[in-house]
Image 1 (tube, rainbow, N blue to C red):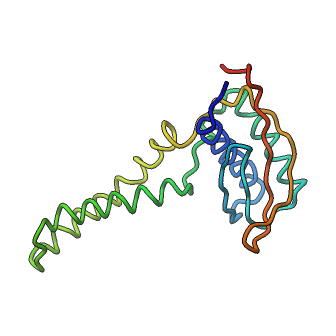
Image 2: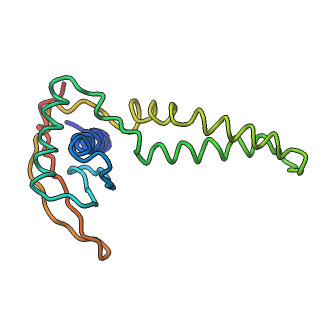
Length: 165
């Protein structure tokens, strides 16, 4: 049986793969996604038929061995990693008693952190926030949903409970 958090990780990977497929057709496409245990939500200018076809293609490609599609450079994990790493760098560079004289140290530390964070963010995606293990996943449809006055599409993913690999 696949637990809830593992489903979210796998759906997050399928979400990224779907965005990769959509971006191949429309390179500057601006979308926001959010994975959950039942699939993933997409907010943006995309037709449900196009989204459904992209999700199915993404699943097909991931099952065929393109697990690298589970990682995406514009993921929120990237933003969180950059923010956390630069904040920690500034904190440690400034120390317990910040002084103006420590500002150059903080600038160097935060610049270095900003430089290193994208690689760390992609690594966190690969090993922590997403999973390419989608062999037990099946596309189950696209539905329109509303939350707090915002309409979005939800890609429903069904998981075969005994289809673990």
